[in-house]
Picture 1: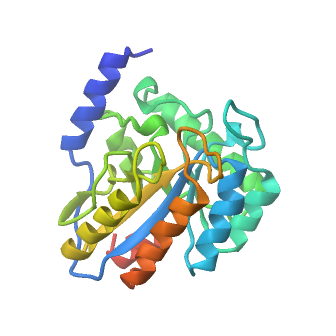
Picture 2: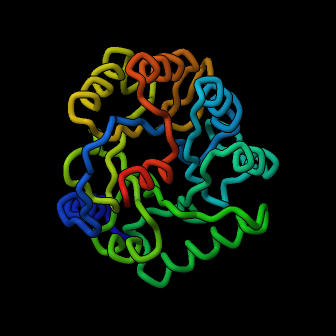
Length: 247
C-alpha cells in the first residue's frame, strides 16, 4: 500500500500530466451535478430536484457499496439504480471496491473496472460505464493513461471550472457540500463559468436536511439549480457534456 504522502505526490503529479488534453470549443456554459458512492438520498431527493429543473445527473457508483450501510448513509438499491438509468441519469464507474487509484497497479485496476461493469450489467444489461471518478478524489499519475484507454473521462475533486484546454482524465469538480461552500461560493462558480464559457461540475454525496460531512441540504442544491436556471445554463450529465464539446 502506498503511504499517504506518496498518494498526495501522485495526485499532484496527475494534475500536471495531461493524459487526454482537449480544447473546449466556443460554446455556451453548462453545468453537471455528480454524486459519488450514491447514498439513497442522492438517488431520491437529489435526482428528484434535478428532474424538477429539467436536468439529469451522473452517479459514480462502486458495486460493493450498493444497498450497503455506511457510517453516514445507506447505499442506493438496485431498483433505484434502474430507475435512475431509465430516467436518463448517467451511471458511471467508481471502481468496484472503492479503492484509491494510487493503491492499484494496472492489473488490479483492470480487475476493479471489469468487476464493476459486470456488476451493473447484471442489474440492467443496458448500463454502460463510460466515465470514471477517482475514489476519494485521489488521482494516480500511473493509472491515468490506463483509464484514458478505458473511459471517456475521469473526474477528480480539484475545484474550478473546466475551461480552455482541459484534461479529460482529470476533470475539475467543485464541492456541493454544506461544510465546504455556501450560496455565495456557488454563485461565484456559476459566474466564472458564464464568463469563461466553461463547463462547471459539482460533486457531492448525500442530499438531506441533516447531511453528512460530505453532503448537502436540499436548500443548497436547490439554490445551485436555480442559479443555473437564472443563467439559462443547461444541466447535463457528464456523458452529454462530453458529447457537446466533441470529446
